[in-house]
Image 1 (cartoon, rainbow, N blue to C red):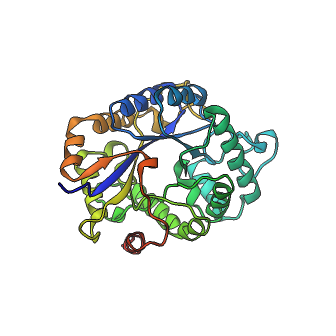
Image 2 (cartoon, rainbow, N blue to C red; image 1 turned 90 degrees about the horizontal axis):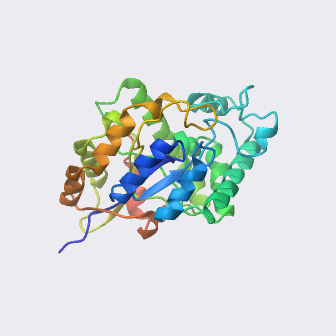
Image 3 (cartoon, one colour; image 1 turned 135 degrees about the vertical axis):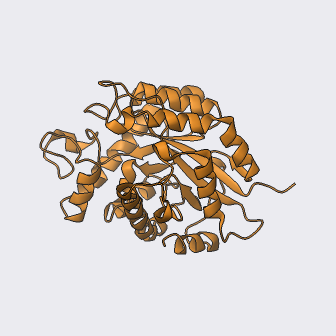
Length: 318
C-alpha cells in the first residue's frame, strides 16, 4: 500500500490568548484535529495554557509577538521604538508601517525575542518545538534577519514560511485580505535567504492564508493542499503545515495580550474553524487525499535549498 502523499502538521496559533480559546484548542488536539500549538507568552492565559500543554503533552512552539499587547522584555520598562506612548505594541499594521519607514530599532526586536524565549522556557520548562510569528511579523524585512539570528543562537531549528501557492487567485478572499496575504507571501519569500543562512527549517508547503476564519471549509483546505502538490514527483511525500485559529470566542474583558481581546478573537469564526477541524468529514477527505496528520518533530523536513522546496518557492507567486 502506498504511503501518504502529504504529512501535515496542523498548528493552532494564539494559544494562551484566553481560556476560552485555549479550551477549544485543547479540545481539537484531543480529537486529533490539531497536532501542534504556538504559545503567546504575553497572552493573558499564558500560564494556564502552559499547564494544559504539559498536562496533555501538546507539542508547543513560541508564537513570537511584536505587534499586539504588552512586551515581556526590557521595552516594558521605558521608551521603545516597538511601543506606542501608552506602552503597547504598535498593532498588526502599525508595526509593519514602522518597519517600512525605518522606525523600528532592530536591537530592541532582538531583546524582545530573546525575552520571549526566556519566558517560554520558564513556562514550559524546555525549548519550543518551533518559533513562528504572531501576524507573520517574523518575515518582515530586517526583522527576519534578527529572528533567524536569535533562533540559531538558541538552538531552535524549525519555523514557519507562510508561502501558500496560489493565494493571490483565491476568489473568495476580500480584496484587503488578499492584498495582505500576498504581502505576507512576498515578505516570506524574501526571508528565505536569512532563514537559510542560519540553517532554519520549515515544511515544503504551507496553507492557512486563504482558509482563515469563515473562509475555512473542507473543500478549501483540500484544494489548497492539492494546489501545493502540483509538480511534486509521484512517490515524493510532501511536508505541509496548516495554520489554524480554532477556539471558543473570547468574551471581554477576559483575554488578549494586555489590553483585552480583539475582534478577531471574539468572532464566531474561531468556533467555525474549531467545527471544521474536528468534523469527521475533514478527516475523511484528508485520508482520501493521502494526507497523514503528524507532529512537527515527526517530520523529515527538508533543508532549505533542496530541489523540491526550491521548485515550490519558484512557483509560489503568480
